[in-house]
Length: 432
Image: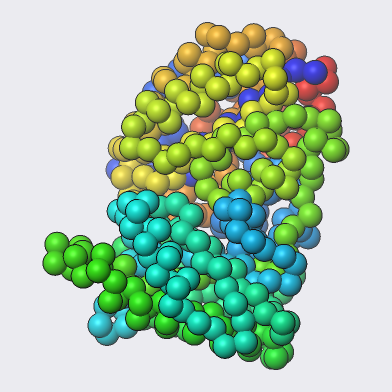
């Protein structure tokens, strides 16, 4: 069986940008190594979902799962990936550390300038002093601005409650988890330009006792934690320094059970290594039967490329494949930094793909390159647009696409495929 290197350029796909003369960052970026793989492989577009996908939904789909059938919310994935005690029937929610002003307006949904020590101090204070009537809870600060809340109760709990994160509005929930405001997902750090940014409490999305009870518990947690955070010495010092106080925890994507995902080890006898940064990624990797190689967040870009590259090259004989995820393009899209997004793509090409291609046998390796979603650099939001994909290596015959981007890949051999059909196709290629 050939080796697999599956690379996701998070949010690299984009829409035409006015500042780029109607081109996208992928069209403008100088990326000779990625373009070489496009010329040597087959290309196309992937429709991730018919709505703007969140990252966990996209990854689940790209790993061959029918998201509409298996998705149970991000919360349980965060709990599993952060090693937070979670059992079926508990309510797990993804959390963000944010900031709210005296008028009740949310001024930030992600405070990410906190040290590990500060995050741990907030976590300890919340777990020590918040008390929920009729329930117990575990709160854990996972990484950066992220956290997870797991609520446990002898009474039945429900995931059918609204999100308090204003960027993930849910006024209606069914098996297809329809969203009434799909363009609001994945907001940038500061959201004063958005309407309706006043804090909204969680409410039940169905008229059941368990939904009403669950919403009540979440609201009680948020209110109590707000009071504790506001009085915390760390926040008092932040205000003195002119920094935003970390005085709000917003919640989203609750779930009461883990999804049933394709396990690659069981289904394909495939031994994969996943480079995972976030708790949700780790949770998905565990459920998919992959070994986790934890990646610590770092401001050293060379570390980001080198740790992945050297680990792959040293472990080619031990693993059947590698899942690699680069987040920088998406980060710059959300912050409307188009030139920085272009540079991040060029750096990944130069410092990861360049040395990778010099050190592997492409004839015995399949490389897949794609994005988990399209992120508009102009709006700062995810969109439902299809993303480019390239599959190269092995005995694949080229389709004559010359460059890896949204426009050129649309003319490739693969045409447009559904995300859940990609991995089964790739697994077949590994055998030949």
